[in-house]
Each structure stands twice: as C-alpha cells, then as structure tokens.
Image (cartoon, rainbow, N blue to C red):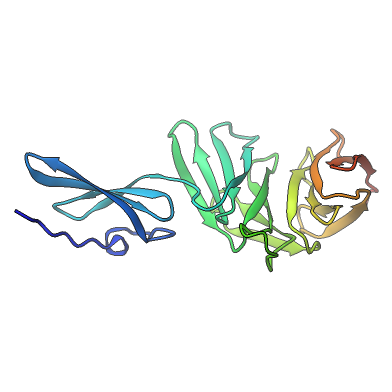
Length: 232
C-alpha cells in the first residue's frame, strides 16, 4: 500500500521557517503505518509532524549559513547566552532549557555581539558577506531590546564591517572596533558618537574597557593601542 502525504509547513506552523525549503525527510512507522514525519528545512530547523493531524512541532534549530561569528553571555543572568553570524540572525539561548529562547533576523551578517551590564540590551556589529563582497550595511551597529529583540537604535559611522564591540563597565557607553582600523565610542542612551580613535594600521581585532570607564584598550595585527577618553 502506498500512502501519499502533502505537507505545507506554512499552514502547519504559527511562524513560518526562515528558509522553508525542505532538504531532508524521515518517516517514522508504528505497526506498519506512518506515525510521524521529521522534516529538516534549509534554515537548519527540524520539525516533528504528526501524520494524523498534520500538527508540527519545532524540535531543534540553529545557524544555517556560513559561520557563527559571535558568542556572549548575559552578565546579569547566567541562564542566557547569545550567538550570531553569517545568517544575519541574533539568537538568545536558554542554558537550562537547552533550546532557543528567541531570535531576530537582521538585514546583514552579524560579526560581533556585546551584552550591556544590566542585561537589558544587546549590541550587534554588522557587515561583511559570505562571498567576501562589500555589503550595504558594512559598519552598521544596532542596539536590541533583549526581551523582544526589537531594534532600539541603529547607527553607522564606519563604512567597513565591525569586528568587535564592548560596553563600558557601567553601561553608559560602548565601543566598536572596525575593519577601517578605527575605534568608535558611543553614548549608550542616545547611540550618538562620542569619540573616534585612530591608532592602528590594521583592522581592530579586540577591545576592552578599564574598570573606571575612562580608557579603551584595543588590539590589531599591527600593535596594541591605549586610548584615554575625554569626559564629554
């Protein structure tokens, strides 16, 4: 006996998959009849579909294009961590639940993340491309509300992709290291540029703040640099 099933994940799910193309299917049998169907999408999502009702349940999901570039933990809640990468998604994961808590789809690959000290805001630096070509959003940053992952603020002062990011110890400012060899410092409340630091001859790879929030230390392939910030 041959049984024919027609499945539409768009109809079966309240939220459509990021990449709905089906790349793999596995049929589960019970007493010779189809009991459940496992479906994998091009967006690295695996669903379990009940054969009788057509109801679908998301089992697992993850990043699906290129590489994962960013990983950061919530300084105010060790239960949560965030990842991001070439697929232009920012994902917050639950450690105890061992699954995704929420995700956001941005309009460019994400190269770095930083979590604000109070745990309420995620900073994402954008740019680059899997193919290596320039992206219209190179140099852009976004501030995301952690509870909803909605964009709270967006800015762009560099025209080259952002490689690293860090909040000051009290969270009143944040710094970005860019492929244009500069460090950009912003006010967290307004997302306005406070300072532009020029000290490298190579893309900025890492940066960090002093405990008093008055200095930013950055590193690149050429040498390290130490920037003292004026009170603005």
